[in-house]
Image (cartoon, rainbow, N blue to C red; front, top):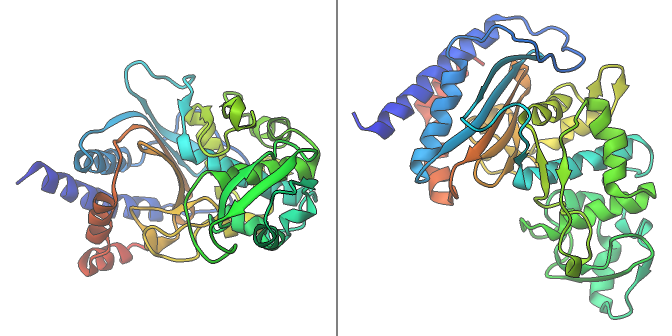
Length: 352
């Protein structure tokens, strides 16, 4: 049996056993926050995920997992680090940064600074550069918070939005809401909109209303180069520890509640994941889980295999950091085709 086939078999068998073990425990009221004291590790649970990431790494030409953490029912049941890494080492989370920015949009809605996802961004913009064309100005007037969250803004270039007194210079490649295009400009614009809506620097607002309430202490958030405006890199600029990544994932698991505080509304948590079951469906910066897209599991992902995976039905959050190579569409497609075959789906559905 080839190495690839062996790992595929390991993944599928471990998943079936894991589902059985997880579902035998009654999922009652969830814990109010994360408990990092050592808990009982469900049999084969770490092996299942290690096999999964090993398979993905094998297919992408190499893999080096630097950390793997599993939170079940609010309790840390597994934590493993590669040599040179530990619980206090921040990791670059790359595009999972986008999910932090999206979370701050949900917080701003909860705080009343933003009315909702349908609100127009023009409500928050100060001065617009006279060089903006009439067509681009029309598109800007139609642009909503939801367009920025879902990569459907149609923005081609947007500069000068570090704070509201700056002049907005913007151009569009398509009307808002018509074309999905994964990029960094729209989410960075969203970060600026949140700052303009709250009247606070984005990082200051993030520390006060998100990071500190969750006990997150490790965040390093880089700025873009000065020639690009010197504003926070909302596309891929955050470093944080895997434990702090778990905290963020559990906030979604717990529908925005942390201890005695409602950080964002339960409705926001319900909206965050993709509406479609398609393997590569995209929600409010969260992707359908590559492993089990048809069960409503979703994840924040970053380049090279950074994952905050949220499994609501299992009351479980999994964090993985490391280097997985550039997983291309062929590799993703191969995995998803395997998982979505009728026999595998039937087998998995027996435990759901």
